[in-house]
Length: 66
Image 1 (spheres, rainbow, N blue to C red):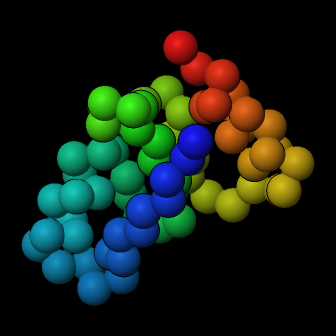
Image 2 (image 1 turned 60 degrees about the horizontal axis):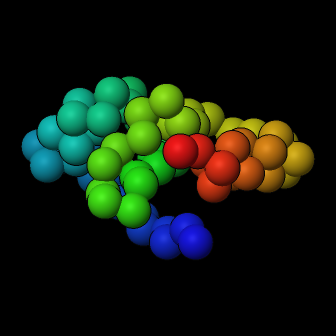
């Protein structure tokens, strides 16, 4: 089961910049994934826009991840 969370970083203030730096994001749009324990699954990070079928395939890989 996936639980969506959203962080609005459009203000680009100190907090936003720290959050983006923490996860290696230059700017939105980006989608990060975390496992059930809250551990960042960095190998599955998405940056930019994706076609629906590409996004769906990626989500399935996240769901199937060990």
